[in-house]
Image (cartoon, rainbow, N blue to C red; front, side, top):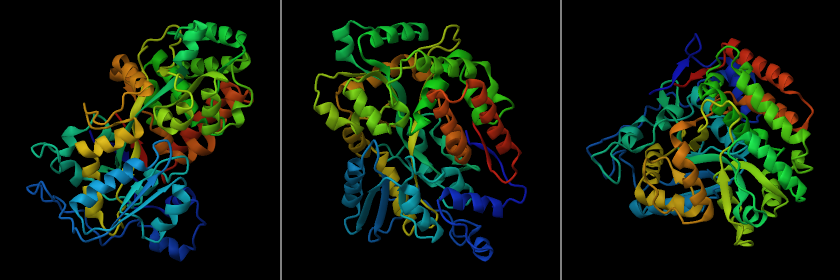
Length: 479
């Protein structure tokens, strides 16, 4: 179902909105005259991509001689999968020159190109330094990908692409009634541990938070820190917070936060979840120095078995494949955050589409960009991704190329009992300035023991209320 929005009263992007977009792009604010020139975002003289869906071979009428530029975030998934998918495009259009870049700072490298209207044809806008999807979509700088949804699937031309996708993919990528972002990778957020370490010590996976705390005491007594996490990127802690809260009070606890419902952050389940997290700190169950570790450092300490548990997404096995290869007996396993006592929704799990791909409105080859995305969703495209990343795509019921590794088996096992209770979390993406500038850092302070749960809730609720009251901020809604 399409995402509902609350547009600006004028129907246009306000000067204040452009100021915020410039800040999101990490750029200096231009002079007023230039603001007037760029306030419309994408080029007004460009219509949407016209598709001929009777032509299953080339529905977007791609000019096979045009070059194609693909820029992807080189993070946990790496970029080998993209190089393999680009080869599929090249095989179909051999005269097309493909330019590839795998980068980590999307904002710094691609932000200026959006401002100068020279963006790449395909952009994987992900990572800690991504540009906020909502800002680009609201400013008309993303092309409408609806033609992609209505195009014939490469594998079965009798089916539209939209009919091959998991539920929620279209809704979560829709802004202002337009499908702008294809979230391509399906991510499970979980708590990871070493199966071999647990077997050696005689420990068993805890099923409740009470059991977790009891096990942490045993782990601590064995001279190992029970938990570590990346304090530099507190985003990873959202899994612990919201899964505890969603399991305790239901998935609507998270949905109401996304939808800016009144006092959503003040729900009792949020406070109980925060108090549970704080107990890990007060009981001495956190690896010393975790608050200063980035994601790779915390993951390295975990794989060295300095800590027994770490919260992170299902890209972990691929991102740390070199370290894990050095310890082939590690036996990577995962579990969902154990439920608090009294939980009403004990199977809730943060599992959702991610890794957002877009075709910029000012791309030189939008038709080629859409065809590239269609290839990504094909069996060969999925196989290239899964084989290189050990991760699933958002095509329903398909897992071509998935290797048989401990991490993959762990994810598949975890999803058997939880997939039907999965929830997304969109506040962080829809309202990135508040989330990244206020809520993420404050959650880190809670885990470091410098901020109480009540203080955090007050700050988070005020940030949400300020967004709701600001008419210049485009509002999003999910069902």
